Amino acid sequence: MIRLATVIETFEADLLAQYGDRLLPGHHRALAAMSTCRSALSPRMQVQCEDCAEQRFVPHSCGHRACPYCQHHESQQWLERQLQRRVPADYFLVTFTLPAQLRELAWHHQRTVYGLLLQCSWETLDTFARNDRRLQGTTGAIAVLHTHSRRLDYHPHVHLAVPAAAVDTRNRRWRTKTVSGRKPYLFSQKALAKVFRAKFLEALAHAELPVPAPVPKQWVVDCTPVGSGEKALIYLGRYLYRGVLQEKDLLACENGEVTFRYQDSKTRKPRTRTLSGADFLWHLLRHVLPKGFRRARNYGFLHPNRKRLIHLLQVLLKLRPLPMPAFLRPRPALTCPCCGGPMKILRTQISPHERYTCIQDGVAGAAGM
Image (tube, rainbow, N blue to C red; front, side, top):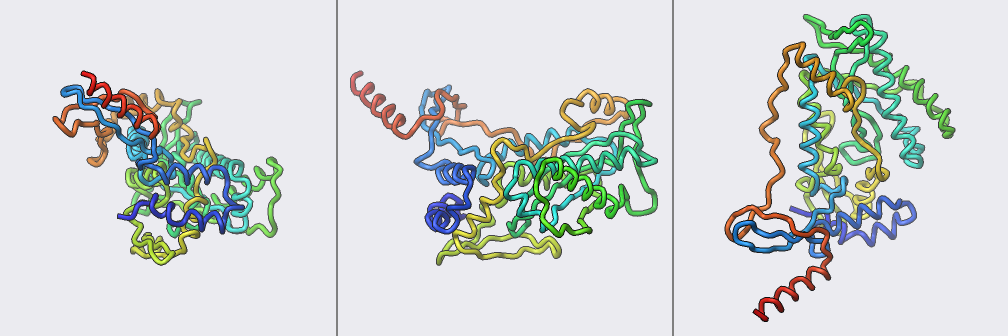
């Protein structure tokens, strides 16, 4: 398997020469982290076996959320939390897409525009839920921002996993929306797009951001039924912490080019794309979010501060949280390579120079005994 660190080492100079004036500080931090992830240059942690006292130095992962090699456990933890909050209702995956004419604006004002994209998407759904004659209350949503298409092009959009249900706190009612005998239906996609367009343009005006002309009148919002919501949440969690491309999809790195595999969004069949090394790294780095920006957010009755409400609903509706999928596993424990016993962490973030000093001190101590 081709490692991303190898690709960075091979083409970083070409990237800096071609795109150096467009790279942001966050891009440089991402490159530095991913290029040394679990390598000889990365910091180490000192561990010791609790049974035989064997000591080892284990490389740290970089922990960067754009790295495909890290944070698998954090991704599973997020997914587990969302699955535990599911309610007995049909779920829909609602996608709000930013028009191509506004993507340049989004790139130059990422923190502001991404925040408005998430906020306006939720406010649109909340407005529809409150005005819907069957719901008449506050719904919930699990929102995840994506900035990429499957081909790794810059394509900002927001996915929201939404139950067809709402809480009417004033009348203490729980309402769900079901359609028997027909395809599940939540809200009109065209109506959602119109309201979302108006809210987003108004938010841009309040933020005093210049709106490029012309702005298209027809925007795209997709509302697809996804059953219990499990598969939709698994899809959303896939790119939450582990970057936009898995290392297993890197097929070739030769002759100054990189070839990767992706799934065609229309045919659902695997396809390949080949880019120059510098272009490939640039396509990856365009999806590194501003420092501290939260890609995933919960709204309505699915907000983290509404845990008591979710628990009350599960009790009143006699709902047991569904069991976790079989692939969810706890973080693997460190085991001793000598005896197989558990290992405990003594020190972390040891630099390569400190590690060499520790080894020399250990050898000297052993010789003096």
